[in-house]
Image (cartoon, rainbow, N blue to C red; front, side):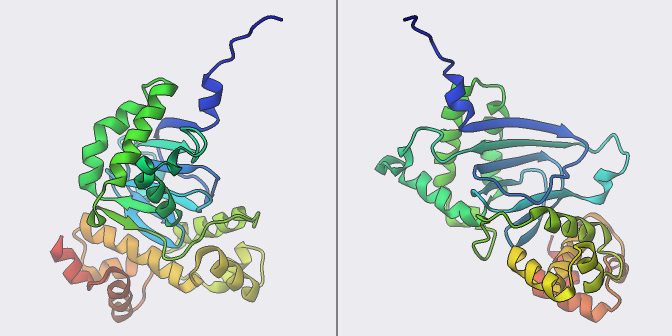
Length: 287
């Protein structure tokens, strides 16, 4: 019988997938998958959705998403316009828990990584200090061989596991992992609609119609999938965009209020403080 040498890369390829994206915009669907995902944004900005978390992201954003945790990165509006100067640059590292072999992280010497992966079920965002420290290692990983990538990823995860509490932030407030086959496409359509039309007067009936559901059925579905009511979610989208405008633009606060879909300045101030922890004026001058 002839002895055949099998390609060792096939073993690694099933457990690790690392690639670089250089594209005009990120517009992936609201989705989840069994692999863990470590995503590093080197050039891009917008709003990310991880579980029930809605947050802004900027260059240097480094996030670890646990398996089956729904997530979506959407760029700021300018990225969807024809502008050659705006490009997305990101490194995506997808891997299974057993990418270094079955039971590897059950060994005592890897307890820190095991705990890190357990924490990622809610999503973890790392400070800019951490992402800057790992910048070169992350950017270089796409150029390595599959075996070298596994070793480098192990090293990166080990260093992340040593992060102090102030250098990492849990994103989702509840366990939003999706182990069922509930229709994520329907929710993706709704999120895209809200993200594209938050400046207008969107009603519950509008989004229920987009989802082809009655308002009562939609409310139950949306709460189950996002852990937020439609109104809470819409307010977060509006306020996160307002916070970006306060940083990047010199427009009066009243103008920003109307530009993100609010008709009342007192209501805008109330929602802003509730979500961001400061009034719009205090937020702008603190930065």
